[in-house]
Image (cartoon, rainbow, N blue to C red):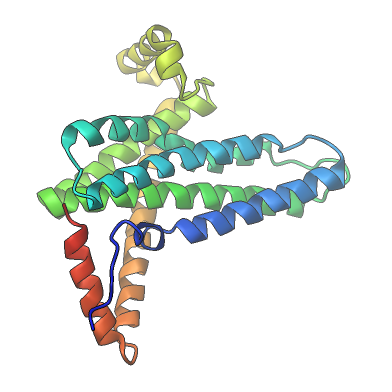
Length: 250
């Protein structure tokens, strides 16, 4: 008997929704403990930053839903892709919250370091999961070279977006609320990038870290899939998954 399969229902399990939710719940619970422990609002901003980190992942999941339903038309995916690209820096941005780490009253430093690390890791995971959706889609259509070129370009733009947010304090919604001011600021960066000391270093840092971490993530997923395929009785499941993957492709 053939196993029933719903491509749309398989999206959460294939794109890390459960680990993302569990990491987020753990991070928010740890933050709640810290706020109750210290009776201060220190690090309360982390919950908002984590919410913003979920935004690009959510858009990527919506896009994947359209893809597996055969609705991956360019005019449908383009707005989602542009929104995702504008919001994507919010995910790895959580790593930069380590600048707030210092000794504070009541709560030990190691606890705050663990709290920031958990939020940073969750944000980074959300970024990799959302990047993986678009990279796989591109690889199916234009090949591995084009897909990795996309990862490299996106990583550079992400690094620049993190610079805009962390150093110059721009927000994602400023693309819509203050586009003129934002474009003028970006033009000044293009004209004289060395006049902004943190711009080249921060952009280059994330332009290198993101592809490297994504390569590690992709290798880990491939290894886990191979190990699962060698388990007793996995042959039928592997055949079913290959068939399901073909059905997912629009």
